[in-house]
Amino acid sequence: MRRVIPFSRMFVPAAVLSALLISGGAVAFFALDGFNLGVDFQAGVVQEVQFAPTAFTLTWEGAGNAVISSDSAGIHVVHSGAGIETRALSFPFADYATVGAVAGAMALRLEGLGVNRYPGVPDGTPSHWLIRGALGDPILGSVPHRIHYLNPDAEEIPIAVVRDLMEESLGHVVVVQSMGQPSDRHFLIRVRAEDDAPIAAPPVQAEAYEDGAALPPLVRRPADGITDILEARFGAGQVMVLRSDFVGSRFAGHLTDQIGILIAATLLLVLLYATIRFKLQYAVGAVLGIIHDGIIVAAFVVVTGMEFNTITIAAILTILGYSTNNTIVVFDRIRENRRLYPEEVFVNILNRSLSETLNRTIITTVTTMLAVMSLFIFTTGAMQDFALALMVGMISGVYTTTFIVTAFMNFWEKRKVKKARRELAVASGQISAGKPALSKA
Image (cartoon, rainbow, N blue to C red):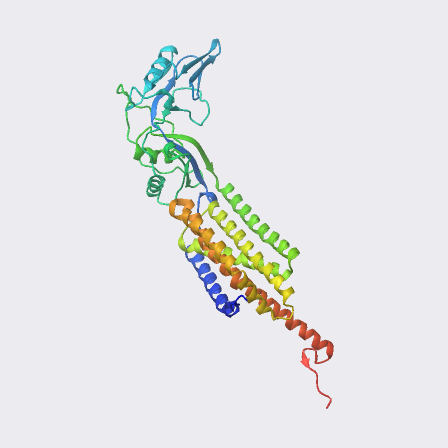
């Protein structure tokens, strides 16, 4: 016969511990001015960049318009305009094997096209290293358009270097994500900023073309502050902007409202599901457990100063799902044992059910924890925070199901039994209007 562990002895101490943790979290929330909100909940800039040196720049001073495009096979220019015969010029990489050959051919074949080799680019750089920007096919003009290249053997740039550089320059937490393979040197950077406020950045050291002419100034936007910070460290022309978006405070507020609706819907659905499958007593206990886990993890996020963003929300929702699954398993065993032992005291049913599911709880939690610990050890930044929140939430989930939810159910059952006895006493005349009936003796 399986040994029954008296978990019920810890119901009161666990309730006291939870009250202390929640109170401490509430104090920390107000003392630390709430969550350390990330760019997801504030106005900010989202920029996708790739560390790819500039091979050459293009300007247009001729008649009509010149539109440039590129693909893996080569570079293409379409020249058109009023009174001009439209023509398309292609510069296949198969015919022009080096960057120097491509640049020379473009300057020779299209009058009015200014091609300026960037400093430090070797003549023998393979032309198939040239990469296409993600900002569409631009119409060339007086503002230089940069053509970048990516050496597949170039030194990788660790994500920690990019994050530390941005945070040191801006003075606050910056979210950096690595995109693709490490050799792609491709990152997504999210930075907090006030609406329409430029991002302060150190000046980029001026350079010159190979012929000694000064590089013309580029048109700068508020979002270009991110590029300036990176180029101040890695050199001018070393960063290609693939995407740049500004998230206003109104959108951030709308996202906050959506998160609130999502959490409220989760609680309602769990309440309905547990009520239909079990009873209202079980359903309220499950919702109480969800709220308890959510508050514990939120308090941990506040105390540690972890950035509160959509990844944190994903971690909390994952924890709630994990905890709910564990709670439903225990509920199912409680219901089964109530049928098997109808005369047994309810608190003993709880202890028996928790004891019978203990092995399953330990094995599931430990195996899941090993995977999450690996994620925590071998990642950095937002993913490491995600893993840490999951580990805290998993421990909280087991604790909540074992001591908080079952303690609430025991409290509910005692109240129900007490009420039933009272109604029975009233019906039998033993008490009247809340007072014992007087004896006629």
